[in-house]
Length: 329
Image (cartoon, rainbow, N blue to C red; front, side, top):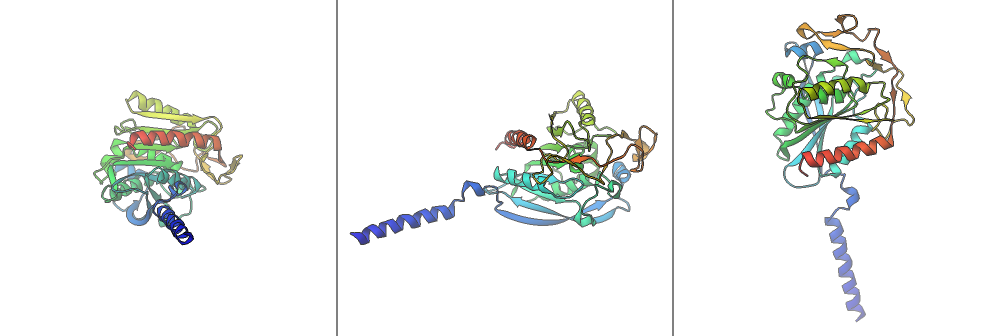
């Protein structure tokens, strides 16, 4: 009798262990089922050359992308994550975990290492700001052909310099000149981007939703210029929304950031600049009518950067709801 009881108890325990082995606990949903590292070819070129669509003499560059395939079967939705001036940091990894936990794969672009940089915040002129758009389109080309990706459910999300890249990657003009993938992003999400530059035909964006998340006290990339741009986009009929958080400094979604925020002592900011695209793709300082450089008087040093838990929670909820709707999760 005792033998049969013990045998039965052992069988129950083994069955429970087997079920546990087959079904990962909910706490592990943010772990990708598979990670692939994709080296890929892009170009490094000045902004002026990008703006006129000229590849001649551009430097061939090999970058890497980290493709984290979420748990799930078949073709899955993907969010492309484009970092800021400091490279892939805590904010990008935060969103990778959030998105993988939702069953969304992620493709993290490293736009720095392959170019020999760890970051360009203190020397913004060392890398044209529009290079990230080209890097993004090249990543789209990889993903659109991948057997584990639903090519109709790829979203772009960027932060700071990468947020600027994500925002302006929506321009129809740039797609015509540089996007060779044959695919389109399902949506564009930009966190605290720089909107200080007015490009030619920049209100002619693709017919996809654009969402911007920014902070009122941001003195790296002020929200005011983004409000102006959003107003122009809405007037042109774009599906665009800007969400503003009253206490959120630049980089507010980085859990590793300082709280309260601190000055990024050597970082350059164009917060006092107004720049426009002139003839031949030359970027012009509107105050001087001369070609813009990072030696111009309007460039400032030492913007504040730091984490804000409340804004991060609110943005996480907003992005989650937006993606669930947009990607039909």
